Image (cartoon, rainbow, N blue to C red; front, side, top):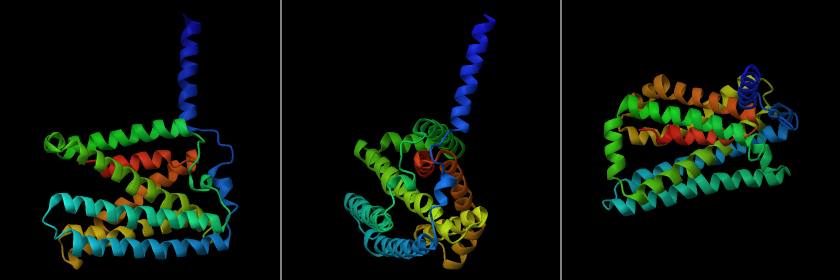
Length: 261
């Protein structure tokens, strides 16, 4: 009996160690040593084009999509334009930059390394965030909305938030910018703060349009509420990416965060 208890305890501790102290083949920090000033400068190329794409998407959304009276046309147009401008184009840009520097997709967190603990941790945190968000804020209204929504709308929302938003943003900000900025900014703290600020500011135009507030009112709200929110999220996603050398956990949590009520 004592021996069985010891084996169970050993299995439990081994599982915990696997989840929170994974053994990496190369390691996130080791990969950073390969990036130089050229990689750091290319981050600013990525920032310029991503900001441009997000601004164009916001302008199109505000002037062309929001005024649409037909709900189906509005949803389809929004999804198509969003998929192109904040999904396919930014992802394509990162792929081109990788090809230019002859770097693999594994260097932006797309690898099978530590996939299992990354999935488990991502689901645990993601589901906790989703359940907390819905139960704490408006579980009743959420379940009503969910039950009333047509199946295609639910599937569309899941695919859009998972692929266009979570997957692409993690590739762009954590996978590419956060790692390559090391070529210019050697301080981990300053690097995380810099990219976290970029991550927050890029969202400013679209969220401002959605808010319905004046520029002054939303700017105050942004600095008090949204900026800390984005900085904390970025730090969490960076931490998980660094620990597992994989973007699986950040992508999963990012999806559930955006999908909460």
